Length: 371
Image 1 (cartoon, one colour):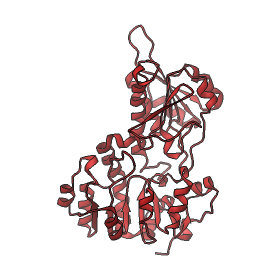
Image 2 (cartoon, rainbow, N blue to C red; image 1 turned 180 degrees about the vertical axis):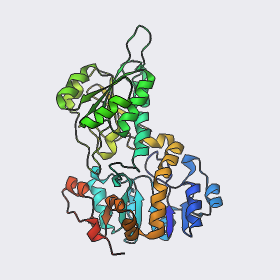
Image 3 (spheres, rainbow, N blue to C red; image 1 turned 120 degrees about the vertical axis):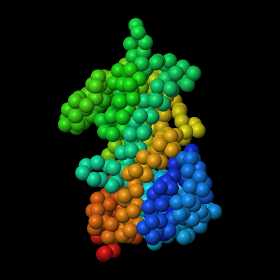
């Protein structure tokens, strides 16, 4: 198969979808890999490393899309990239279509097979999303602590406190991968940490595995009771494939202390607050109801090299599988891959995405050609 690696063009997106080591493995198996010049620069992987691994270097994205069948990316395709997609293309990337109806419709209209990292589920886990959730979770405590500084517009609270001064209070909505990693770093800083979760068994797990962290059942009443005393609120809510529920209302923000900080990790899926709107690393924050909002839609890109390596660790086996067998046979080998197919032959084949946008849904196992 011919595999294309375009340079990411979303604002401040420095990750790259395939590292030179994975290129070498693909080439060894007889595949052709075409990498756009500069694609790896942001993650400190220069063109020379890709050439040494056996890749071809293309001068622009148009060449990559023209010559490759399997397009492997990090972020959802931007309009100029959607325009280059054809029915024979297989697009493998983070899509987050539930947050963007226009992209859903235009992507389906290309006729390509679009497979989303974030909707491949294996044994109740999302193995291609979890590495980025780990990074975003850890980052959320760090950037939240930074923006609590007075010169950043925060209320001037040091999360760890000092002897004689109580630590800051952190409330995390969601006890999944992102939430647990946020709690680990917040506790490491010395903050007072509470996790809100709806799954009782998950709360038992968190109680055993997270030291000095409280768990509280997640509902509106409990959240509202905590908010007047919180310094850093972290939204770590995930409904796979669906738009994130709006758990934090504008009225709730009004009862928070002026200068407190809200970090919404769920922004890629539309965000879990009604005041959430996507920001960039260049201009990451804004204020609503006196609360500093940090809502960067590609948080892990800030640590592009670490994030690229972590992503590749998770995606390599799936890239090899699709390249070696093609999508129909790959789905026979690993049926979980079916759950990743979001669009196929003009159809929307991810039920949560179709439901979110009130669009027709087609079962991917029916739409997929026979092996």
